[in-house]
Length: 242
Image 1 (cartoon, rainbow, N blue to C red):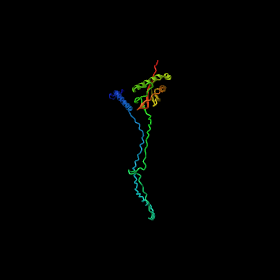
Image 2 (cartoon, one colour):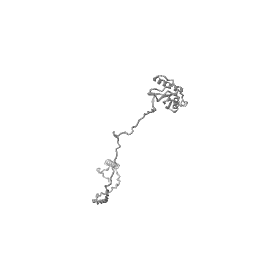
Image 3 (cartoon, rainbow, N blue to C red):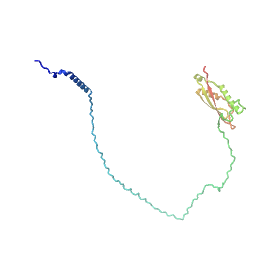
Image 4 (cartoon, rainbow, N blue to C red):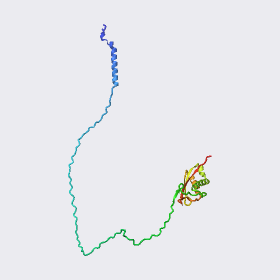
């Protein structure tokens, strides 16, 4: 006996549709699982805030009245009455004025003798550029003021050239430069107060040695009186390298 098949109840007829539907359902389920998000929940302890109303305590006002201070003790005044007899006479002291007036006469006139005025020599120092009569260098006598000044400067240059000596130590160390020498020609014509300023002590010492060899001169004059004269001269130390 053959089994009869109902063509409407054949299962394999729609198998492709069922497979596609199942595949789509599985893909949708897989996508949902992958996109599912989870969150971590931390337990937070939320404390309980206890709000209490502030209680204002009323402070009673106490009236503090201090008792008045005691009155000061009454001063005891002792009256002592001394009876003085009016038979004694009291002499008044008369104070005489010591002021001098026009009516005051000089008892003994004072005689004034001749007053002797002593001249005090002033220690005056004048610069060479403004002095009236410049110091006279030996060999510059009997010249006019302008010629005497020019002769002085020329003799100074000749003196420096004649006594110039380059220190060997300065040559070995390669020292050179300008040394400014300042000195004073006193009221008797002697050289004093020699001081210098230069690049090194060796050159300064040599420049001072040259100036100290200057001869005695005829002192310079200001208003006809011998005075100190300040003078300055530069000395150049320079060597030629071979």
